[in-house]
Image (cartoon, rainbow, N blue to C red; front, side, top):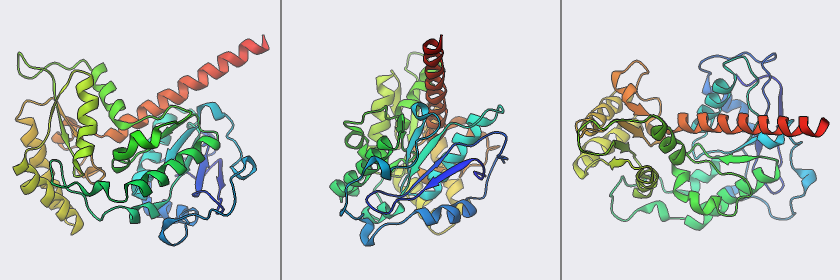
Length: 333
C-alpha cells in the first residue's frame, strides 16, 4: 500500500484536493494487489468541493498555496483523477508497482482528484454508433473542470500530465490544448506499443486488424480508431447487433452487480471480434477493467490501455530523470 515516504497536501481555497507521493523502496512494502476500499477511505478526506462540485473563486492561486515541490520535479507525473476514484487508484497501483518492482524507488507523482465531476456527466452513455450522443451534455462545464485540474498540476511542478480515465479522453484535445508540459494519452500509448510489437496480419493480403470494445459514446471509439489508423492498423468495431445484444446487456449486468453474467457477455463480444481476424482487442472502457481473470485465455488476446499508459509514463519519467542527472553532472564537472 502507499503508506511510506509520502507527502500529502490539501488546499480548499481555489483548487481541487491533491495527493502527492514519492515512495521510497526502503520504507514501503508492496503487495501485488491492495485493498481499494481502504485506499478510498484514506483518500476521501482529500476529496472536497462545494455543492454542485464548484470550487470557491474568492481568492487567486499563488505559488505559496501549491504543495511543496517534489524532490525531482522534472520527472514528476501529474495525474488528473478519473470520474471513478477506483480507476484512479488502480492506475496508481500499476504506476507504483511497475516502477518499483526491480527494487527501485517509485516515480514521483501528484494526483488531483475530484469525484464530484461525475455529477456533471450524464448517468450513462450510448454505445458506439448510438444515436444522439449525450456525452456532449455539460460539455463546457466538464472541460473547464478538467482544465482547472490540469493547470493546477502544472503549477504544482508536474513535468507531464496523464489521465487514467476513458471518459475524460472524450475531451482530451480541449483539456490538453495550451498545456506547458507533455500530455500523455492512452490512445497514443496503445498505438505505439502495437507498432513496436511488429504484428503480422492473421489473414494474408490484409492489414493488421485491431478490435476496439467500448461501452461509451462514439467519440471514444473514434479516438482510438484515429490513433490506430495513423499507425497503419485497420480498426474493427462491434456491429449494431453486438452492441445492442451483448455489450449493452453486459453493462446492465454490471449495474445489477451480476459480475459473472457481465464476464460471460464480454467473452462473447471478444470472440465476435476475434473471428473477424483481429490480432487483439482493446478493452477501452473502465467497466471492463479487471472483469476477465488473468488466467482466462481470452485475457491474453486483450489490451488494457491503462497498462500501456502506465508503462509509457514510467519510461518518460525514467528517461527524464536520466537526462536531468546527466545535465547536472556536466554542470558539476
